[in-house]
Image (cartoon, rainbow, N blue to C red; front, top):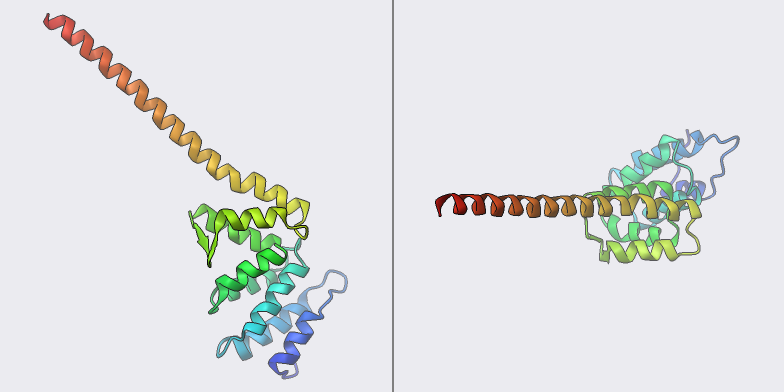
Length: 177
């Protein structure tokens, strides 16, 4: 493999188009970028270029290269703000699944953006695919619904318990009369 400069690699990554759904060349370019530049110095330009790859192939999550890109991005300085920027431009399957993990961990802010505001923006963004909107509405709400259900069950249990205690107290009181 040739030794490319960071700019040359980023240009090749930005212009990548798979042939016959083969993402191996992208994986090779990413690995070279990672090995030669990420380990020593990460440029904001590289981070943006990689997020744009995820955006361009927004409904592709199978090839490992996309997960490798996401995991590598998470370790970079400035990740959160570029992550928010990417989600606002065009959420991809991978960035949304990652956001769902944050949501399930009760993260309230992503970078400087409140989670609910970010989700609202993504859902109302014309660049967001209908399948992503559906996923958000189904998966991100389920957790809240489950939490509400658990709260309701606890409340019902408490009321039932309180009622039983009052009935037992009443019986004891009548017994002692």
